[in-house]
Image (tube, rainbow, N blue to C red; front, top):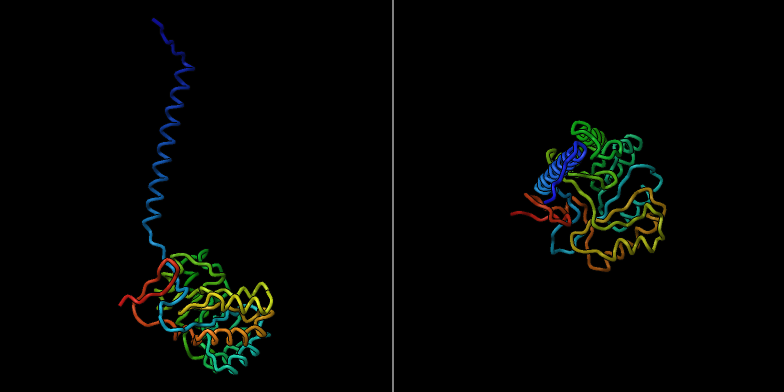
Length: 255
């Protein structure tokens, strides 16, 4: 018969292994609990497109930096009798008040793009609300109208951002077609990006300060029309009533 003699050192090693095992099990259980809790929180998604059978789409412009091309864009839109949506940063509106008034005068939507082009998810609820309110107030002072559309800078959002926007009786709007004009691709590439994957209810993203956007815009409009689509402002694309967004961000009326 063999006897196992446990020394103090052996006992200490066994005790440490036991404690490590307990700690690992505890960490594992906590991780599972956190994963379950996280999974139970429903992700809130902004509006990327609209559920519609009509061949409607919207063109939108983000304005955050320069202003050299805004007049050219407005003239082209007038030429084709097209109304669009401009998302303005509050600081941009403060710097170019005449352009803000002109955009509104020509019948385009004006949306809120935050006051300082901040990363909204990084802000506290108080600062987030201030970003939206400050921009709204600047635009209302210049146009007499308070925006009802909000686009997060950089397309950066989380549940808190979307819920905050909704609590302020506004729509949080993204896009499902990205022109990528800010990367300064060729005119042809911008046109292709805007028209190739066009579907009913699409929202197209452009910028008022991208190099080739003014020259691409006529071809974009013509390309969209050739596909049988009508271009309307986002406020006309979005249906009124209670809604939800699916996993792709498509806005669907609930009634």
